[in-house]
Length: 219
Image (cartoon, rainbow, N blue to C red):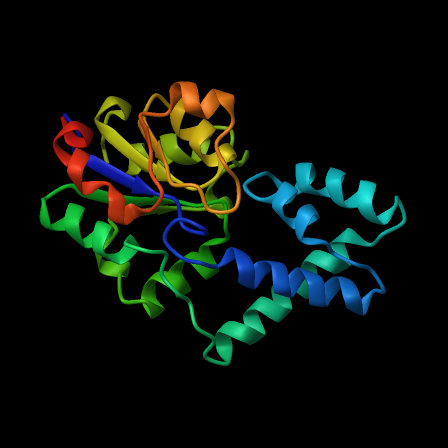
């Protein structure tokens, strides 16, 4: 029986991927580089080391990726501190509230940094629903490695077989499946690959669409 629900953050709870793309594009333009949307999509949900491989292939071996990342984070910070909007994905807030009111433990497992995770949850008024947050600051290996999910389950004192995961990315869903958790994918910019289609518990267009299956999801 499911006792615990663990959510990814970017692309699943919040429509932040388009924000990150615009910030990366602006940072790249300051260096005279063109950061395409296709490149951005290829970098979603993977480690910075893996993303660097795609960026070097696009920009060349002499590109200053550390400077690109640093400036991008600055631009995101400037946007957030200026009061920039953090829109929920369709049905996301309602889903978090629904599972919380059902008495389930709620966790967050994000590849983002803790600073932004805390900021997003506080600003959007849902921080109090989460009993555990695990971020890039808390793990040695990012998704698709299952470490972030295993640490979240441990923090919630939940067995992996009692955890339900919602993810928007292929790497994230792969991590949830590898952790041995009941994993559902809600695709944002990347559609599920063959592995996810064969191994995910369910695939949904949005978090608004989960309720007809709720008894099956929580069984």
